[in-house]
Length: 396
Image 1 (cartoon, one colour):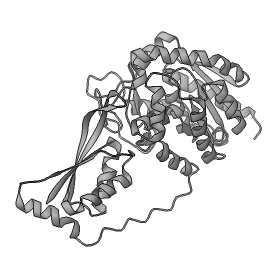
Image 2 (spheres, one colour):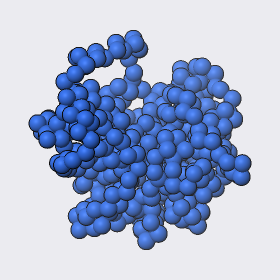
Image 3 (cartoon, helix red, strand yellow):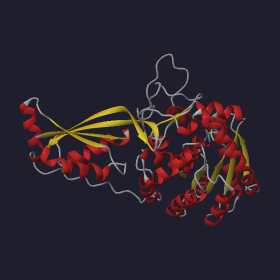
C-alpha cells in the first residue's frame, strides 16, 4: 500500500525536511507546496500561520520510519503529520513509489566541508536552534551573502528592504581597521520603545562592525511561532502585549552572553527593566547605550502597519515589500505580530514607558539619545559617528 504523508512546517525549513527524507531513502518523492495558510485552535484562541506543505509519497511499510525522520529535523516539538492511503492511480507510478527508495545504490556521501576558521558565534548558533528552531537566516546575513533583491515593477517608488540595507551600509565610509576592530569588541545596548527602529539599526551596526545581533524580542517571537516550550510559556504574556517576566528573559540572555565570550554584540531591546539592567551589569561590561525614540504617533503608525517574515526581514510604511504580502529576500509570506495589532499597541507602549524611566537613570553616564523620527540612513550615520568617536578616544 502506498501512503501520502502530509507535513506542515515553516516555509524556511521545507527544503531541509524534504532533503533529509530523500537522503535517508525512506520515500520516493516529496512535493513542496511553498505557501499555505493554516487556521487552528491553540489554547482556546483561533490562530493563523503561514506554512509550507510537504506531500510525501512512500511505501506503507516505511510510514513509521518517515514519521521518525520528520521528527529528527522538524522545528516543532509536535510536528503535524497525517498519513492517508492511496486507493488508486497510475499503477506504474505507484509501483515506482514502493521500489524507488531501495534502488539507485547507497545514499550519496556528503561533500567534505571546506576548511573554515572557527566562528566566534558557533555556540550562539546552537542556542538559536534550541530557542527558536523555526528561525531562518536573518535579513542582513542573507544580504551579506549576496541575496538578490526581488525586482520591482516600473511603478515602484521605494527600494526593497534588502536594497535599502545595502544602500544605507554603502552610504557611510568604511572605518579604519583598528576602529572597526575596537567597536567589534564592544557590548552595545540599543534601548527604545517598540516601533523606534532599533532592530533595523542593530542589524546595520552588526553588519558594519562584525558584531553579533542579539534580540531577545525576536528570539521570543520566533520561539512562539515555532511552538517551543520556551515559546509556549512566553506566549501567555505576548498575546496581550505584556513583557515576558525578567527571570525568563535574563536566563535566556545569559546563555547567549556566555556563548558569546569576548566577542562584541548589539543587545537589541534589552534590558527593558531596571532589574534586567542590574543583572546584566553583573555579567558584562557595557560599552555604549543608545536610546532611540520618536513621538508616540510615529510609533503607533509604524507598529500597526509593519509586517515580518520568518527569515528575519521586516517591512513598514517607509519600507514596504516589493510584492504585497511577500518577502523581498526569500519570497516567504509576511505576517503581523500579534502584539502589533491596534488593540495591543497602546498597552505595549504604556508598559514600556512605565518601566523605562528608572532604566534611563541607571544608564545616564553611558546614554546617547538619538531621534528616530529621522530617516534610517540619518540615524545610522549618527550611530556610527558616536561609536567611532568613542572608539578613537578610548585606550587600545
